[in-house]
Image (cartoon, rainbow, N blue to C red; front, side, top):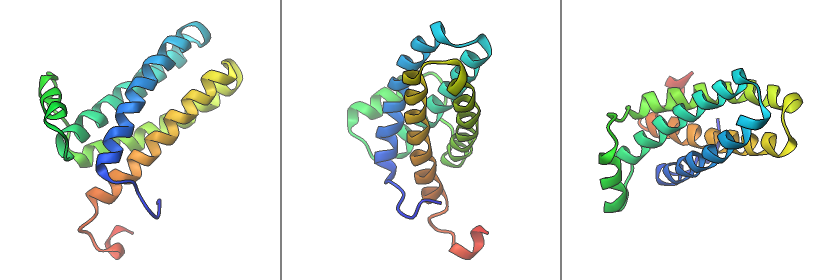
Length: 140
C-alpha cells in the first residue's frame, strides 16, 4: 500500500481528470484497437465514472460540484464499493496495458498507463479513507 495516499479531495479531482482522459482514450482506441480491447476500455471507463461519482458525493466540495453530483441519475456507490471497483479497475488496466503494448500505438499505451497510475492513486486514497479508523494490525 502507498505510504502517503493522496487526500480524498485530491482523489476526486484526479478521478475527474481520468474521466476526461478516458473520453480521449476511447476515441483514439476506436481506430486502433480490437472490439474486445475497446470493450475492456469501456468497462474500465464505466468503473472510473462510478468511482468518481462516489467521490463527488463523499468528499468536501464547492456547491457547484455538489449540484452536479445530484444531476446524475444513478445513485452513487459507497466509498467501500468505490474502493473495490477501483481495485478491479487496476486489475483490468493490467490486462489492457498488456494487450495495448502489442496491438496499439505507443501514444495510446502511454495514455492508458497514465489513466492506470491515476486509478492506483485513487484506489490507495480510498483504502486509506475506508480503513482510517481500523488499527493497522486488523488489516492483515
